[in-house]
Length: 273
Image (cartoon, rainbow, N blue to C red; front, side, top):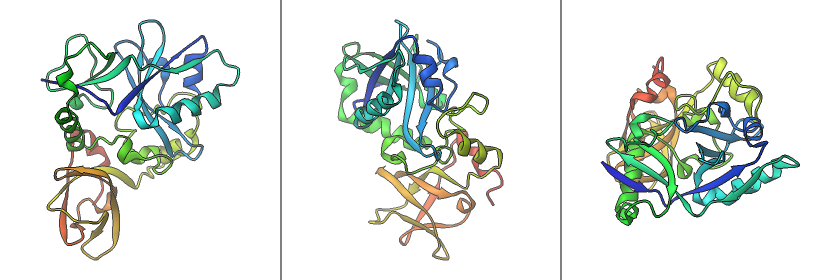
C-alpha cells in the first residue's frame, strides 16, 4: 500500500447554518448525502453546464464541509463561492493546516474510498503532520498521477475551466452528478444531455506509442476526432475524444494511439461503433 500527500490539492473549510443549503443550490451532486462515511464528488458549473471547478467534499468533525480542490484553483473557487454567498450564514476560508491524502492499493482502516471510483483507492483529509513526509515526495506525486491516468480519471490539468461540459468529463459515471435533486447552476443543459443521450465526447485514457509534438488526434482518414488534455505520464495521457471514434484507428501525427477502457467508463462505449 502506498500513502500519498497530494501537494497539488488544497482544502477550503465551509461552515455556518446555511452551508448545506448553499452548496445544494450550487453543486451538481446531492449534498444532503454527505456524511463522514460518504464523501462526494461534484462540479460547480457555468449556467451552460460547463465545468468551472471539480471538487470532492468531506464532512468535517465539527459540522464543517471540507472542500478538496486543485491548489491552483483554490483562490478562484473561494472568490466564486463568496460571490454567491450574499447574506447567507456561511463562512468560507482556506484551511492550510489540512492536507489531502490518497492511498493506492489496500484501503487504510478508518478512511473512505475515493467517491469517484474505489479503483482509485482511499481519499481523505487530515492534518498535515499526520503522515510521514516520505509520502510527500516527487516520486509519490508521479505515482499518483500515473495511477489516475491509467484509470482515466481527469483532474484540473485535463479538465480546465469553462472548457468542457460536465458530462463530457465522465461525471455521470463517476458519481459526480445527481439527476434527482433540485435545481443547481448548470442543471438544465446537464439534465438535457443525460436524458437525450447527447454525450458525444468524453475524456478517455489513451496509451501513446511514442513521443509526438502534437495534441490533435485524427482517424486514418485524417479527420479530427479529439485532442490530448494535460500532460502525459510516460506513455499514458487523457484525451477529449469523439465516442464514435473509439473503435477506429486513431493517430497522433503518424503514431498510433490506443484507447484504454477502464471498468467505470465501459457504459460510455456501449453502441460506440
